[in-house]
Length: 157
Image 1 (cartoon, rainbow, N blue to C red):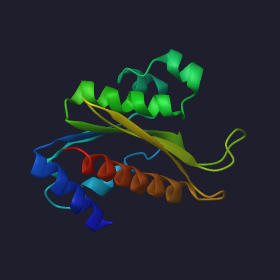
Image 2: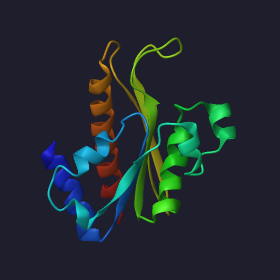
Image 3: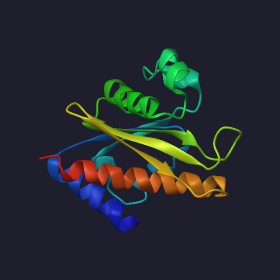
Image 4: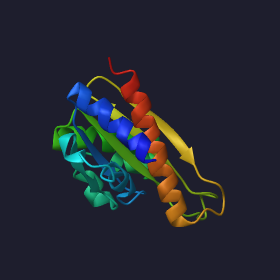
């Protein structure tokens, strides 16, 4: 995984781009990955773990969007990414929302991940296997977010 993070660092620094994240379900796991390779301060502004709807609202995630689409939706992930762009001023932002453990409405853990820039937004649903442990699910989604971010940057130019 360190090689993937090093690739992220290279893609961002070669283009002079800066990154910020708004994580919910992953609880900082993506930020942990990003900062595991020296030199992150050259491109990584930081992140916010917005677990509650109240904190998500500070990133312009509307209660109407949450009510209409649910907390664990593509629309909320995209709103988190756009909110991080607006609030922190990076060139690229990631938004993650999901569920780290099964409940009555979700059989397996999973999340929506969105990557946004001023030009576009892409999103992807990442599903974890049924019975996955909470930290397993968080780490899988963080790795999936890293992969989506790398894919997004590959088509930057």
